Structures are given as structure tokens and as C-alpha cells.
Length: 558
Image (cartoon, rainbow, N blue to C red; front, side):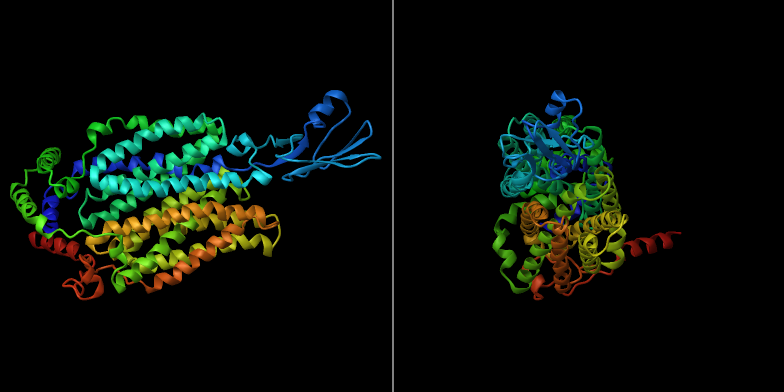
């Protein structure tokens, strides 16, 4: 079935205008996806603050006594009280009463406590909205964890729905429903409502990512999918770059939530423009719908209808039911070599997710302008996605993957430990620069791992293997926010999470050594090919052979 289907697709454009238009529309889906994935870097950002008393705040005293000022670290003497304001970021204030007991107010749990956020921090976040500081600070990272729990659930739900109901309906539902959920989130009255809606959003966003990526990959022939994957990642990078710009221009988290929820409405024409996957229609034996789609594609691409190839596909479909073995997730662990590949890949995807999201959410806490840091990090990530097209063709998959792992580890560990090993006015900026360089390496890792994984798994379990690896990515997304919470528990170690993320990625670099190179090797079709007993196990294709052949034919014609 595979041979005839590939032959049919090759006669529909290589790729044609129709495929490129649909692919561009699918790429735009990455904007709402990325916005929701990384927006907690700003929604959960913690500005500097002071803890004061509601009974003896500077504003109240100022109303009573014109000569009283209450600056940071300053003292006031009012009617027998000596008032000591808290240091920035401290969770309590002490009021010394002459001849009596000291009165200590703790924020935000003390009813008399009043959290005063510094006016230089103009961005309103869920932290400032619900005072998620001090003993309540874990709630900010918990909101991110809950969101990625939703993403994990969405992977399970929509993976099966996309196979059963089709890619298009899942994509449309997970594109438009988040608009309703997002608007509800913008008006969430309490933290509990906020996290519940964010969980639902995570479920839908995974449905959008899964269906979009699958539709995009199924548009193209195998030799073009690596380029399609790289372009998709470039749109991911562009969306990351847009987030800090939006956060800077719209400093209120509720208003920003409305802005990132509404753009999906512009995609309403997708209902008519977006086709179902031709591969899915054929594999589901919906041949009438598939024939209509082939006719539409050839018409837009100004090509003749491939009648012979279409007849061959229909003929194969009539006998394919007798040769359709069903595979499950257990099959990726069934044989020795495939089991080794799967276990290593599970960890690699987990480590990449830990490093990527750990860095992403740490960026707004690093020294320097948080908006500029985030934008620059998104820019270098975009460059990494662009370069990977050349790098993987020139150096293969394994060596770039290992190099990116080791670079990411070095940059993150360096960023986290440098402030402890040295001091000076330039050290914080150097630390931020190393973290941004780490973002470049993480972007490269994400690009390479998608292509590499698809080539390591045989055709019969490729989708199952990719889905299993994606699950471990979501596990990393769940754990990464809790690693960031460690920064608040260890005094004087505000970048502890970066060090831990760096160590996790370092192990990934060593594990990647045990995987085979796939550049120039024919893709495995079945489990026996991976174990070295199949007919394709020793077949290799010289890199660039097709291009050289075409070049030779052109030379002969000249």
C-alpha cells in the first residue's frame, strides 16, 4: 500500500501550489499554540514587593502626619512606634513599639498584611492579582504544571480522536474552542477558576499541535518532511519572539489573555479551505472523498488527474484488509534494539522538554530587561531552527544532537553557577547571556530530535513511537515548573533550576552516543529492519544521490 500511495502523492506536485498554501495555513496554527504554552513566563512573573501593615502603612501614616516617610529600610517614629519597613522581596515587616512587644506582619497570609508591589514593575500578573508570593509562591508554578497536565491528557484524547474521526475536525475543534476557554480565563474571578480553565486549554492545545503536525507531515513525500518540520519550528520561533512584544505592549495579564485568545477567529475560513489528510481518507477507505480531494489538488496545481496511480491505490485497498496488522505502544518495546532506542529516546525528549521550558520560564527572572531577554532568546531560537536544515544535511543527526546537548548543558550550568563563583557588575549580564545561548542549543535540539526520532522508528510503529516520545515531553513540561520552584527554597541560589536542567541535558548527551546515525540510511519499514534481520536492514542511500542524478540528466540534455 505504501509504494502505491507514495507514487500517487508524487504525481500531485512535488510539492505543488496547493500543498504549499495549506502548509502555510497550518504553520499559522503555531501562534496560538506557542502563546498558550509559554505565556506563563509573564502571567506568573513575580515583581519585587514589600510587606507592610494595613494599620500602619506609609500611605495611612502620611495622611495623619505630614513629616512621616517610609522608604526602603527607613524608620519612622509616630506616637511611640518605631516602624521598620521590610527589605525588597521579604515577606514580613516589623513594628517596634517602645516599651512593648514587637509587632511582626507576615504577607500575604496575615489579615493585617499589605503587599506593596514596586511601581517600576508595570506588568500585572496572576502573582500581583492574587498575591502568589511567600508561602503562596508555589501556586504560580503549580498553575503551569496543571496546564501541562492538561497537555498530557490532550495527547491521549486527541491522538485517538485524530485517528478515528480525522485530522481536520480535531484541528478545527482544538483551534476554535480555545477562543471560548481563553476568554473565560481572562475573566477568571479566582485562582482556582484560572487553573481549571488553563487545564482545559492545555488539553485543547495538544489537540491542535498533534493534528497540525500530522496534517503538515502527511502533505509531503518523505524527502520533503525534514524541511517541512524545520519550517514549522521556524514559525514556533517567530511566535516565541512575538510573546514578549505583546507582553510589553499589553502590561495587564487579563487584557493580554484576550489578545492571545481572539486571533483564532481569523481562521474561520479554514472550515472551507483546510482539507482532510489524503492519507487518512485512503487508509479509512473513504475513496470517494479521497478522489474528490485528488481532483481538487490537481486542478489547483494545474496537473492531470493521475488515473493510473489512483486505480492502483484502489486496487490495493481492496486487498489491504487481509494484510493489516494492528500495532500498539507495547511494540516499540518488544524487540531488543527497538526497546533500547525507545528508552533512550524517551529520556532525550524528557530532557529536552525540561531544558527548554526550564529556560523559557527562567528568562523573565534573569538580570536585565525581561522583555528584551525573552525576545533575544526567541531570536536565537529562530536562528537555530533555520540552521538545522543545513546542519543535518552536512553533519547528520547524531553528532548535532550530541553537540547541542553538551552545549545546552554547559550554558545552563554556567549561567546558574557563575553568580556564585564571581562577582561584579557584569556578572549578572554574562549569566543572562549564557542562558540565552542555552536557548539556542535547546532550539537546535528540538529541531533535530523530531527528524531523528522519525528516522529511528520503523514505518509500522512510527506514529506510535513519536506519540510515546511526545508523552515524555509533556512529563518534562509538568516537572519543569516545579524545578523552578526550587529557586525560592534555597537562599542565595536563584538559578538552582538552571543547574539541575543542565545536568539533566548532560546525561542526554551521553545517552545519545548509543544511538545509530540515520543520514543516508534507508528508513526502516518493519521491526525486523531495526533488528538487522529485515530485507531493508543493510540498504543505504547515498546522501544527495537523487540530486546528483537529476543534475547528470540535465547535463546530458545540455
